[in-house]
Image (cartoon, rainbow, N blue to C red):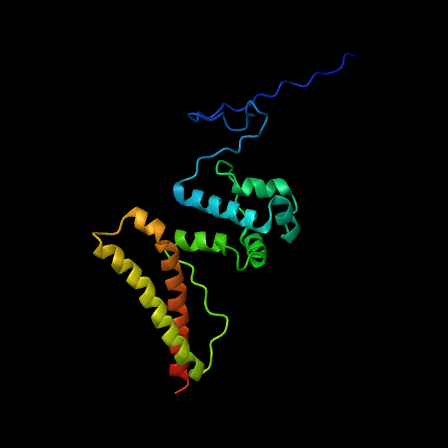
Length: 195
């Protein structure tokens, strides 16, 4: 008796996707179809993820610091803007714990706050007692005054331009003011709580 040949399996019809290969088919470079175009707010999360991975020292180091994800390619996928893969929150927390104090920290948390319409504000690690709090309040008031003075000088000269903002690093100054405002709030709460 001759061997039975299995019937040829038919594939479901391809779904039309302008500019992309049909789902389930491989691209010319052999990669599985994972390519997507994310909306800008999701792209910003990809950018923040890439900055976080860079801050820990690259994909290899990220895999070392992560408790769950050990495959370096996964970290590459998390940062690629056209790949539909995102880092889990617990993995982001693992990596952000290693990057405390580095520029942009906490990268992913900051992007998530912005996506939710807010901003990340680091709270002060320790609040001084009432006597020291008064001295720190005076320092903070002076720092607020210095930054405000820089902005007022630019406005008095005819308006604030993009060049002024860059030259005076006003966005970074504003970020610092937000952090200092959180510290100011904590100090005031401390004084209020003590009597």
